[in-house]
Length: 293
Image (cartoon, rainbow, N blue to C red):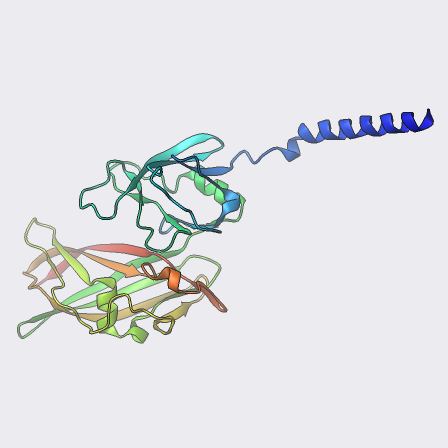
């Protein structure tokens, strides 16, 4: 009889402990939990994410996402509130995506790198406050890099048009990144790798862009030896000359430049190096009011 009483007391205590756990506010599910849901039922939760780079709107996943023909659309939710949604879009199409937010189905950087693109005129919510707060609370948020154009100079040399450009790359995070270095790559290969500068006449006149290759290297032949370490919370300035542009008539221009990290060959790199991480992504910077005499 005494044994039965002990068993009953143990069961009662266990039940009370279970009930207290279920209703303990401290054990509630995180109210700001982020989820990325796909049309086939696949759901990415914060535990599946290694980190998020807000500079490129890219989620780096702990394992590969395996899309199929049922991956037609997606949505991002925080605490079950839908923040934004979009479609999977073929990278082989020349038309624009039918929704402002989209995921390219080519996964150029690998299936564990989920980049969400934006093409629209309204407010871009990819870095919505609710999304960022949720990621920050779970130590999954990184600011990544930023790029700015400091100066642009057009130089006419005989029948050739060259451009001297100075850009600044800033590391906004507390970790070091390996980034393409113009000095290691050389000006010619760096120009081909990043695609050169684009010139858009601000008075609706003709624009200009690079017309010929600068280097004999294949564009995606980039190696770890072409990269340099950008220390945490630091910046670097590159000054380089791009050659072989179409003629740039006198006028006032908006100039654009692309800074390329590792993108199309990311799966071939060990991204986590001893002294930092190889930065994956690309940035685009513009500068208005560049005068060409």
